[in-house]
Image (cartoon, rainbow, N blue to C red; front, side, top):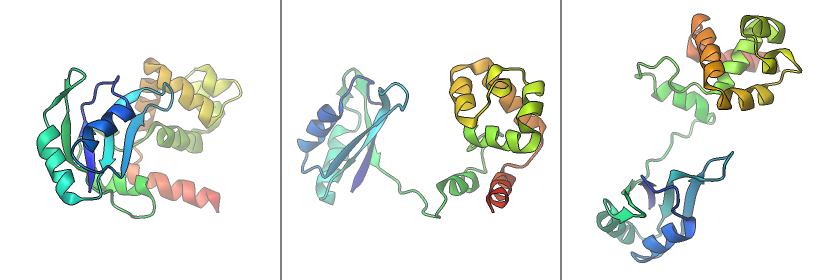
Length: 177
């Protein structure tokens, strides 16, 4: 049984997490989710325990326990829908959100804007070097993730295009053919 552990302190290590759950039974795997850029913990992880009884006992015993100053939450991990393209599944399942950007990644936004306007027009509308000097999706994403004011301008332009979120994938798929 796979368990989701949330509200972990950023200082909690994978070894400490695994040892905590091994006190409840055998642990098949332990995954601490790390930030790609910094390598630091994102504050959650997964434990897989081969025996369901041990996993249920671990949930009961460890849920709400203080670990490294944080009260952790332990629950059964829900499985993701397996529809081939996980991003399409996310867009469909999160359609009840009132946030117009819910489920839309920054990469999807930049890709769509480049396909719609091209780099030259995009650089004219939002004057930032990552769009005007040797532009690429990768360099733009790196800059926009670190610069909130620029990201907001890009998200605003995306929303002003009034293009429904569900139309992103057919465009990019038709271009690749």
